[in-house]
Image (cartoon, rainbow, N blue to C red):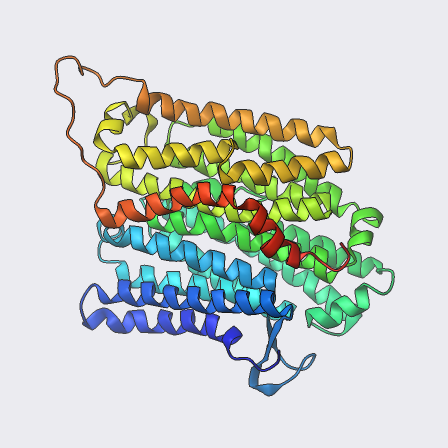
Length: 496
């Protein structure tokens, strides 16, 4: 379909909201929140409609800005892959905003307006990355989302500005590498439109300049994805940002970068050449596998729950990279399915970090004991379910993406990847059991002399999104066959 305005509507909603939020300063203090939440709900509706249409018709939706057709004009495209990622990031944002209304006011007093404006800018940039059909405009949207992300991280605790500055430096290096790669491609192909570039690169051998472009793009996006060993910015950024900012950035930021890698390696460049002629896929698989182990080992050593989950994110980015590196239908399914599952799992866990911070004052493991299961039984039940899914026990969602990853590894006779997956899961058992042991088994000091603590759950507006998302982990697990067959398989590249 050509000329459909539904594609351009998604980023326009968020950019318009980013401008409207500051105008709400003179009205009620609640207006910025409602503008952000309603805009996110509209984004969900537009993304869901785009996904439904692309799946039902089997055709991508094209929109040519100002009526200029590519390669001269700028094109926005929604296909099943990009529409799915748009729906994912907008749905997660709705739940994070729903949960974070009171947290934003308590953790970042007086900063609600810039916070919600930056959230909308972040969503506008990320949705633009997902929908653009032009490599240079992808860079533009990448910078918009990155600047908004730097600002969101900086609105945190007293160490957040330093973490944000480090994020800015490394993120700028990554974006510069990507832009340099795009420049190399433009030198040889003469176009920035992804469709034009693919039609050239997939019909002839790649020149050394084009190979260099591929490597630069993978390295640049690898920084944004926090792929080991390019993950140096992630842990401090997630740890020191406000609870709501971390709950938003952690589930969706690295996933959009993974989308760019998937789009480049499977739709832009020749997959067979990248898999066999240039060892890019093997390198991604190795980096992903090492990241899985590295993240798990360091997560076990942490004494702060939020920092533990940050290192866990490094490991789970490795699962996605390994699935991409397998360069097979099963690997592709595992990578896309794990982006979905991990987004929901990490949203639940970081939202609970925010709830615990509000009740306990911090996220230190030493402050946790079995009084929590009495004070916050539903919150801790949701945490347990999300932890089980992160470990990968059936029938939770996390099991099935790991299962497809194991099947993809066995299909290629790569048993060593199966061993890495099992080891990484065992590491997850260790660091999550440390938390569960404190919550369910370790008694509170002096508990014999004191009465049982009264129930003190989070307010309903914070508890409801946590419970809904945690319950969805069971639904995603039980419905994984439908998700794979009706949602992910239509995304498979033509070469597969």
